[in-house]
Length: 252
Image (cartoon, rainbow, N blue to C red):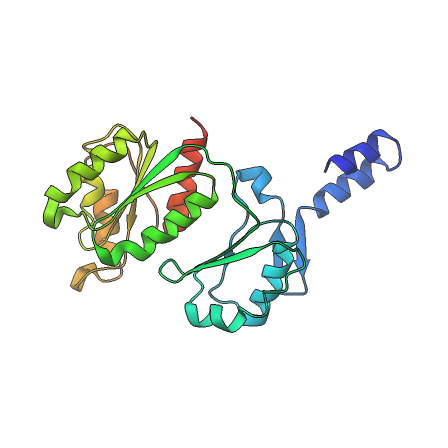
């Protein structure tokens, strides 16, 4: 962008040419199957993540390699068997120095070229052990957004005495937002929001029996919470919760 503007200032290109170049640099087209949003991090503070579901393996590899030309790469909802299939193909990326990290619980592949600066802290709490995969997705995304993350898993209302010491620890550590992940009846975010003075992001999960199957009981409970200060994201959407929490933290 700076190069284009400098060319305009120097009189080497016309205003119309500069406008066209600025518009086209925001989108990177890959054949006929993908249009990558190359400047999303400049607009929103977080680069475009690659959602693996619905893409075949070769399409996914091409997208990963193209994104790697511009910086770090985050691939979400990538099952372990698919990662093992493409693992060898993404070893020889165009940009050298990348380190691949795959988390099978979160189903996330991260390609990184060093550590990033940290700003602010986020706490992540789950009601049960079965909610951990969604929480792990949120943790990795929040860390990639530049936040330190404290976690406490399996502290739901079925044994609520487990919760209070963990809440105390997170408040003492000065977390600026809490992501609370829960399935079944989705009660935990309401309890947490009644105990803290920081924003709470509720994440319903698709864990449950009967009317709880699919996560809609937990979603409706969180939306209907009587505790103030709760925002609710979609079912199993650890990614969205993390980006929202990081956005809050970075405003402070």
